[in-house]
Length: 165
Image 1 (cartoon, rainbow, N blue to C red):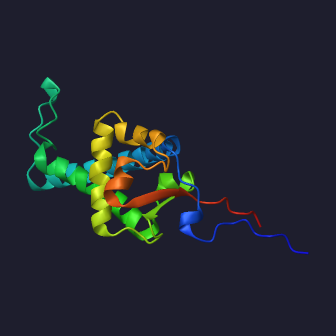
Image 2 (cartoon, rainbow, N blue to C red):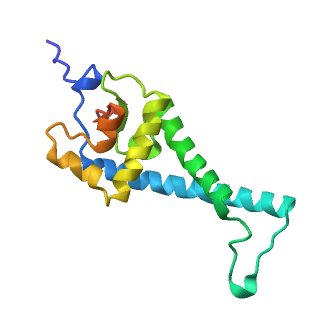
């Protein structure tokens, strides 16, 4: 007689991810974003030196005029947002979320819209700026929802382990 299958078939049947697991995935993603920032900084430095030359003052240990300012920071923001939005929108997972078997989707289990991605990123940034209060909020809610989940009408669930073949 075959064994009954206990694998969830719908997104809403998967267990909700706790704040600690989400923060660990965020730490993994911070390493990925740090690497992307390094590549972006290298490219920005190459473009700045080719187009406008470098006005660095190494004697004063002031390298800010080389690459910096609001345009550079806007590029860093675009790189970070691009990584998060693309990952959430296309796969429902960032690299850190894959490592911790997490998936984000709206409450119906459908991939996030671009608007939901933007809202989620903005509210998560505000949550981290408040010393992680939005993540800690999930410990005190029965459903484990954090600020970004509530604001973007989405959920982060734990995916089942893949069986080895």
